[in-house]
Image (cartoon, rainbow, N blue to C red; front, side, top):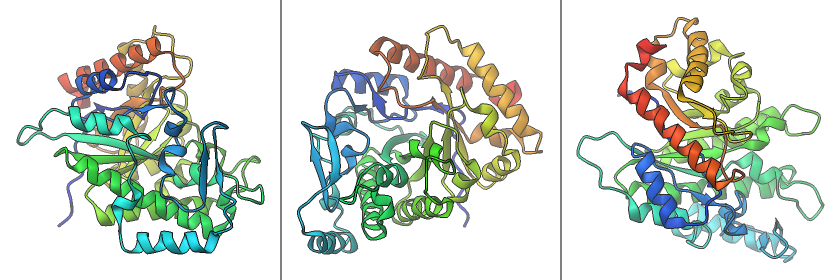
Length: 356
């Protein structure tokens, strides 16, 4: 039996990072604004442990965090073989708890889970988590030879597998809410792939993304998305076969729409587009629902020209900010979250299909 694709209908959710310091108050606000798909917040200004790569490094082999120097690097323990053997023993035995994210690294996860409202019977609701993606993670950590560990096949494979089982631990936690988990792989580094600034091969990107996606899909009922807030080779992302593609629709709408047939095929195959329509970089507070909905409408009209049923587009669409909000001021982040929630409310209250 073929699984029916989810009907998101322009639900809204966040990316992850926030500039706030108050953990409980932030989680309450997220629950209030995004009841259909709350996300757990990453408090990047509270602790270096909530850096997007450091946050997922616990329990992974040969990595050392230095909070004082704010670095994550390959350790010089000299126990490479021993640590890799120990890692694979835990990974292959599926000792998921050995790869837990502790509360010191993710207070937002624990606090959100404790504050969620009970799910009503028959209510279609989700809960979103996130992890650093395999390309951003392995290309951002330097090995002992001074090169990114993505160029160390043995270690990079172990780290990608480690990220996958850590994401599965997160899924198991989120499942306890009674909601269906959605996990985004955060991949800002994909915007450099194919440029003169990156020697990473396209197929290597697809293989690493697909490894994490297939692992999560084979071990759970979660939906897996890929988030890239810059421009990239979107056909490459589609080739990795995620459930959801999240892009910066405010800045890069035209670039994304250069792949109309691929987008239509992705949607018809059950995929979902997460439109990052509320800007985070350069947010002014003057942005309006009308302005942003018009921008979304223009994008949808171009996809409709491929002949795809507009109802499919509406059902398989999510609203998000263009990127994480961690670099914004607290005032602007609050404004952006409320704007995003208003877009969701407006879309859910009207016949979105006919409005475009």
